[in-house]
Amino acid sequence: MKNYLLALTFLLSAFTAFSQKGSIKGFIYDKADAEGIPYANIKVENTDFGAVTDEHGFFYIPNLPVGNYTVKTSYIGYEPQKQEVEVKKGQTVNLKIFIEQKSVELQNVEISAEKQQKRTESRVSVVSLTATEIKRMPTVGGEADIAQYLQVLPGVVSTGDQGGQVVIRGGTPIQTRFLLDGITVYNPFHSIGLFSIYETDLIKNVDVYTGGFPAQYGGRISAVVDVTTRDGNKKKFSGKVGASPFMAHALLEIPVVKAREGKNVSASLVLNTKVSYLDQSSKALYPWAGKEGLPFKFYDVYGKFTVDMGKGSKFTLTGFNFRDIANFNAAKYLWNTFGVGVNFWRCLKTVTCISIPMSVILNTKSTSPNRTIDPAEV
Image (cartoon, rainbow, N blue to C red):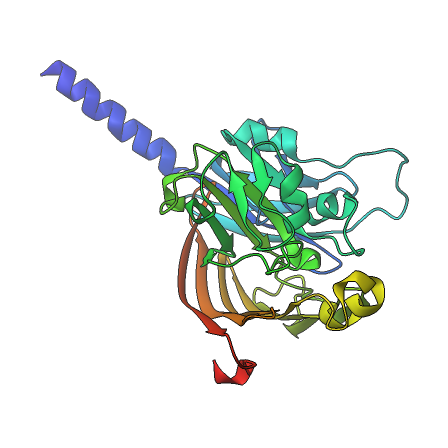
């Protein structure tokens, strides 16, 4: 009987002690464009409490005793920032912190979040990439693309510059799952094989799982390539237009509801398009291709609308249309992929966040041995 009373007393004491504590959670944003900063450091001064933000810029510090604290935020290349908070009994303080890049940078400083990531996550057989790393690699036609970068990773073999197939760790191409913001994409590479549907300037992070991937990536047995894109500039209108001997592309970032300090709700719209004219430019660049040029042509349209509702909630609506045309002498092929995806993202009182993706994808393929295919027919 005494043991039961002791156990009950211990549980009541633990519950009472827990109820006397509070917590801090929130997001760390880049002040320039309100994009979440991954793997930033948050430290509660004069205590042993702290945290590191995840890939979305979210952090959570639980079990803080009641009292007034100073929260310090730091990240390499950014000005450190301090903020006074009051932790009350049984409550969670929500913070939205904007940090600014330093005006003067030290030379030969490499910014990397890998060490912090290894402390908080167990990542086996995972290669993480960013847009910066993809752009560092020498490219074909001056266009940096993940399709070219994947070919230099260990265990990845490309079937060549035609067909757009990638084999990872000996599995067939269909055994690799390609994701775009949580949406499964079935034809991620264009028929020329050197370019993908992913816009490099929009890429925030790429995780290539060559083995041991989590259960959330079910449905494939070889590998997983998970591509996450940026939400777009939430502070000001921006855009980019570019061209190369192979294609032209345009990117627009529109702040629908501008992000401001002290304001929870913000919204942004990203629009991107790529158009290939290789079939025309190749007539001058590659005379051996003949009068008709290379038989490959494609164009992509992509849009993403993001609503950041604050307090760890975000909603995204994604739409896309990717189209390929291969014009051979015997036949002409048309591949057409379009879809819509919705993703509701919610951070609870944990160090991880819950993502609920829903999508509708339609893939069509048309072949004509005797006549030209009008894209409007599909």
